[in-house]
Image (cartoon, rainbow, N blue to C red; front, side, top):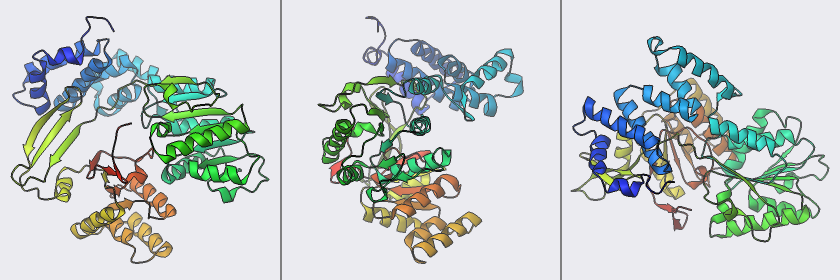
Amino acid sequence: MKKNDLTLRKLNNTGFPLVYESFLLEKNMNRGRYGQMLALATLFINSQDESIKRLGYRIVVIYCNRTKDYKPLYDIAVNSGLIPVAHFIEEKIMNEQAGNVFTEINAAFSEHFVIKNIYCSLQQKKLIDFYDKNIDSSLSIVAPTSYGKTDLIVSTVRETLDRNVCVITPTKSLLAQTKMRILKDGVSRYEKIITHPEMYGGNEKRIIAIMTQERLLRLLRQVSNLKFDYVIIDEAHGLLRDDGRNTLLASVILVLEKRNPNTVFKFLTPFLCDAESIKVRYAGYTLKTYKVDEYIKTEKFYIAELRDSYNKRLTLYDQFMNNFYNIKYLEGVNSEWEFIKKYADRKNIIYLNKPKDIEDFIDIINKEFVGDNGKRIKEACKNMAEYVHPKYRMIQAIQRGAIYHHGAVPEPIRMYVEKLYAEVETINYVVTSSTLLEGVNLPADKMFILDNKKGRGEIKFI
């Protein structure tokens, strides 16, 4: 960064925060003022400061969604390598009159970024190429959620057909999703995937193990000569936590390397500043790092204050200005459920910490909504009644467009309702604890956090 380049701190000491507040809250905006904001965004995007560039992108996204003029976002997407965004605008938004020779050329160029019928961004494509080129090297991969890290796991299994592969996941839900993804790809159609220590028979020609660190440690204790050639640690930022599971994961890694000094480790995580921070002390491996710094999603964070009956309000938090903006007073909203009903989108995740709180919240949904008797819903309820019990609470929840997910829900049921939520359009809510949040990919437009606790502690940034 140049010494005199613009930074958020410098920007805060100008008149920009007031202009930006009017833009965010849509106060006194007109065509001329929108044009000024677009000009500023163009200036910001060409800055050397990463935070300023992201602020510029955020302004462009808001501008385009407000004005329905998506040409600026299209130009930025094309020039920044955000191929999925550019392709979506071409296919869904731009009409034939807006097309020209340049859009045709860009459309043809975008086809070079298609992998398995999915459009990848520039850095996503580079990530895949880097990973494939370094399949036999220990790596640290830092990429946002939904960037295809599970595809990298599948690629490892596919490209190492004669080697033992182990995938370590932090949760059972992520374990199940990873297993299903590998099976769906078909690379292990004739092979056994081990997810429990008891599944190991000792005669397998090749082992594909997908386990939590606790299960893997039990397996290693039971089979003293078992070793792996490739070990993938998904959600590897768990090594940074100050808890017993962090220590256990580090111990498992050391045992694996002790048994096979040539083990190749792959650390996958959505966020990490320094790759060396996840290197286990006393381990001998060295890491090559690839970090994705593309900025495609621009989230909005809201805080709803419902405890003060005389001052119920909705506030927007902007991470760039580090400021809170009052949106409106919440008149007639007397509970968290009323707020969610009012502001929910097509697919919604509702977070609560305790299983009892989750099921109490589901009871509210069951009382509020009328049952849905669509074909897929009927089939799901019938399966649930036969597998568990006709009066199982989940059945009524599914009929009313919701599922719930916590540690006390049997693992096969969790896998089944995750699939239902992803595939059935009328299931709009998943009420969950942290069992579903770490690394599990589910469609969601909005997330409502109703509890700041995770287990016995508070939710914290790593």
